[in-house]
Length: 238
Length: 310
Image (cartoon, rainbow over the protein chains, first blue to last red):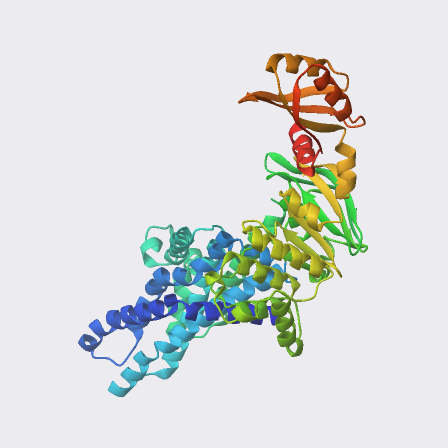
């Protein structure tokens, strides 16, 4: 546990010691607010439904930027040779890095709370739905983070890690969206809808906290973190 | 005590280490010597459990490295090849991190970090970002990292690589100082390095141990030949032929004429000292002798011989 804590604090410091963190948070807030407020006054409703409809797409392109560095840089600089010859378990390193990126995402989401606070001044906002949506966003984001972290462990090139992570996250997201579901045979629709990352987010952000959705996200995260650990152990047997 | 038995490591398509066995006693300073690509780094990576062996066994005091990886890693301080560091961190921050990863309790962490910075003479740099330090100081940070938990065993992969001669001497002295109470395994392709610091040397080439022993033993083993340098005034060809025929001379390495002096290097049987005989021979022929000297083979020559033959 101490190892994981040490890794989390090292990686978090690393985020905030470089301009990346501030650029990331600014870009995230600008895009999310702009996309939301362009329509907000036309609709004349104190609701964040549109905001959370955009969110997965913003995550898709921005979250890989959080994770691309985490393994690729260590592999490039060979610091993995330090990390894995220190007396720690491989999974501790994976978990530490994942939790650090998750905390960073959580900080970004907290910074975006300015949106619901602004809206609550303008009208009656249903905070229950907003909180559920933020929780859903955290789970969805965590899944993208797990995917991005795994992809980062496959390469020593951050740009490649970024692009492949977008591609893989895109596939995991799009298979459950209407775009794909329309062309599938009826028998497969419910399966793909279940597998896609988006549908569960939609049901959570309607305010329905179903244990199936939460278990789904936790399994996706666990699956990619497991692959990540295996990928790292793989160096030993090559 | 470290025991390595029939260690083999195969990568896709080639064998990096081919069935090597050796033992290291507590307190020894061992040098792994070999040309680049001989398998030194792979051996050290297996000893630190970064890689697993393809075949063979490694035991640290009866603990097998596959079953007790973490326990063994706790005993080891490791400086990897090319000294990788988290360059964005500050020296002190990094040593704290390394200390936490080695399970040093919070109450002792500060003291241990201070001790390591002191031993490695890093006090003045402790609040600087590692990436901005000079190569010599980076090397010290790498060593401080390896020492932070006061390990029984130190494994150093080319610790003086890329340093200038003064820094080399400093790091070498540092290793000697630290090595008094520890088992040290270090690798190098520089002979003088190993000769200066190590109690015992293993020469590795193409994944095999081709010689081992103390530096002195290795010299004795391989000095079956001695070189003699001569400068004579006289006719080149005739001198060349006469010397070639002399008993005990195995070959003439080089013979050239510069101004009016003939410069000759001979290789001879090391059991005989041919200098006296050669002096007589030269004087009897009526040539003028300017210089004659004898040189035993250096470890350098042995190394070149051993690693080229195969």
